Length: 229
Image (cartoon, rainbow, N blue to C red; front, side, top):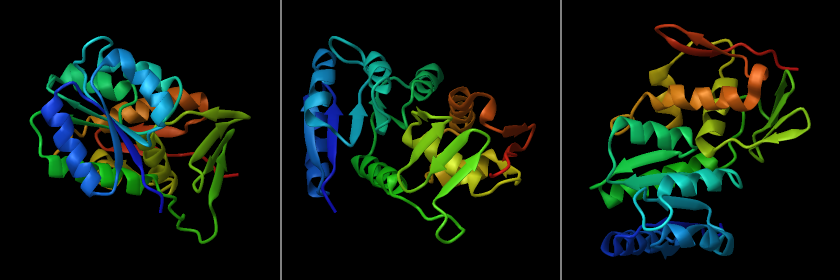
């Protein structure tokens, strides 16, 4: 398997180099960027498979970088920041971040989250053997390539948005609690914020429009009510 590139956008030199050292030991190729103004140029040159993004940077801040990044690509982004208010977390997730870690954090936990996120990016077979695509309404989901199209237009889902949608499609017509969804899609329940489920559902609905067919079950969670074609 080819090595993965991870871009570390972090202006704290000591932290960035510690992260880089650990990731190198885990067979990842890394590059460090310490300035928000340089980040997008390095992204284009380095072509990372994942980005670790601080929010407080000299020049452009992390949220602006994330906004611009999401206009171009759906590669996974983990925010690593000293900002820890609920508003910061929600805004980062709404802009398309896949995970959020608050400083100070365990480097080993960060590596575990990176590994878990890459595993979820790997193609996963459906419960029906040999069935790698599903279609409902005007939406076509290809599980092997992780490509979603609405009509003839590609839908730019983030890694976590795709994983959440895929989980619901594998359990059609079933009432799924927020806890079930979080445990299966994020997998690190004790560290995270379950409210991220609602945020990601909202983003999927916005991107799929009326074709999403995800029903909110008050006091319970969500259910996919679409009919497969």
